[in-house]
Image 1 (cartoon, rainbow, N blue to C red):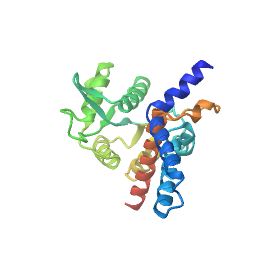
Image 2 (image 1 turned 90 degrees about the horizontal axis):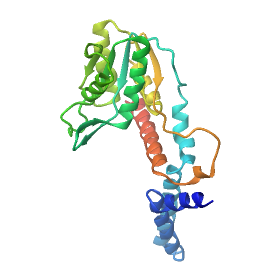
Image 3 (image 1 turned 180 degrees about the vertical axis):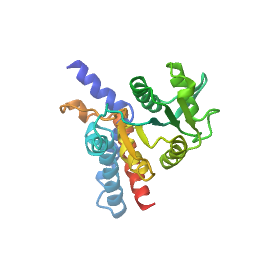
Length: 252
């Protein structure tokens, strides 16, 4: 019981729970004056923001936003590609030098697992998106794969792409030149729907989706799912980013 109490308190005094509490207190402060014209609007706005932030910060939101994306493609251990294509997802510029970001790391590891089973060549794709690093994302991923024992000649760099569409375009150019028209596509499960749809616009014979890291918590409902936490906020924010990306590319 003490552990549960500590869990609740911790979730309410650290972001994003702290922000939700502050918004709720703000609602209480303006509630008495809600009948005034401008206060009515402010009260309504605060309630909407508070409820939306709460949903985004809990596993309830993950069920609404993340899980539908991650279930678009089931886990896949059937590899049919001539080549493995791994999409990048950020790096960290640290005092110790350029390091692979956590999402890129998980995607790269999934690609490495496929390589161990198939010995197929690997394309790592990603440029220097924000210009903060001396190395491109693809170069950092290549360094990581080499540290795991993948020979350099098995890794092809695509280090110009800054968007998923460019990942697909530049990877296709490489594959077309090499005669690789069947690809095992590796990216996060939450990102796979958008990535797969974009890759299918190019003249690949087959695009085999291999989802990697998952954001949502799967399993039976628990009261802990109602508590705000930073992990859910990150996951739901990523999901909303994906929905916006899908809308953008559908119009484009």
